[in-house]
Length: 434
Ligand code: PMP
Image 1 (cartoon, rainbow, N blue to C red):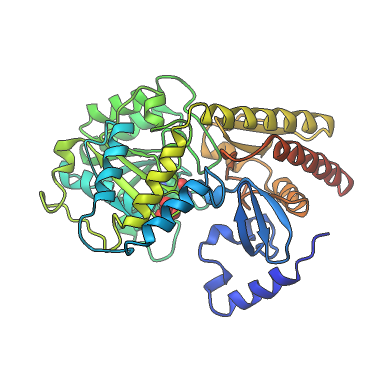
Image 2: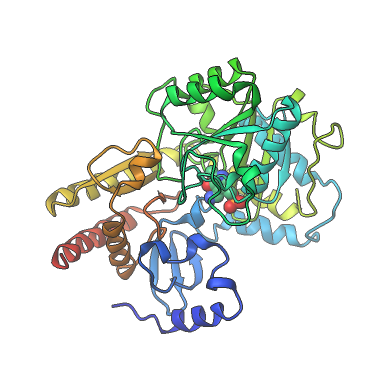
């Protein structure tokens, strides 16, 4: 077994000053039956090295952003160069203009946009803007979808109760929760019913075009998203796409473009920052014109559009323009998932894999996962076992059965071979412990 002395040392020390030892609850190993979260020393390419000097192949990708792996030379150079000119002005700067133009070019639906510092802020603001524009209060979201930790979004956000407008978090008021209507993903009739009932009060329907937060879950029919948009518009509600995970994940642009659909507002984050903190939101001109200083909906940010995040983002997107880069990620992910399915078959493990492009989730269960209840019903104990076996063998994935494996642009054939070897040994070890 792997040496963990330094990880234990640092994590114990962390708990004495950082609440729970982690700066985001998803990093704790609570949902995989406990254990000490591995403390990382550095990342390079597709790999991490922890504080005990152990190496891991990284499929966490920092929950999405690290599509170019760690310390990508183009991004590193851009950041190094950017620091020479000072790192924060609190004024407009050319880098934010260039980056806004780059995003608009990639996603023309962003007729106007704003940079913020996180996906949470981006989604939170789209909701405010939608309410400002429509004069309505309620928001429809999909059960199990996480959209950041703003109060309103902590309703049916994954782990807690769904569908009844009850907050998942203490400190969120009942009034806030009452404004959120939750429906299952991939179920148009539930959405139709909800809008038939509350349509006049609904400011926006908020959706991840490809779900990333109860595992990777794609719309099950080609026209699902267009129908979501049509039904919402029929009731005078705006449509917000949360593309914090999906933006630039599957191709150079939005997931909306993959389905040929157009939302009214978009939230972006993660990949577009090249690894630095970022969020962005934007959409139709007449809607965005309602935002201060032009309109009455307020939104601001001391760090928003800071030159470092802008230049890291520009560098990252310039690499993502490389022809074939997304096809390669998909090819590697295909090989990996096919290999995992064969191994599961060999060891009589019942698994279901949802994959879109280079991102996939392995569920322990036989049923298709098309909405949150399906993901909930998969075997979390099995997943926890699998997770710990993989970690022991130097494969790093998120400590939750609801998260994705992300294949990055810098994963290699060797990484895939080594990963399949580790999966083979892990399934083998799981059999012996039954
Ligand atoms: N929306 C989605 C779809 C997300 O996956 C996340 C983060 N996992 C967020 C919003 C929030 O982004 P951030 O953590 O940058 O605030």
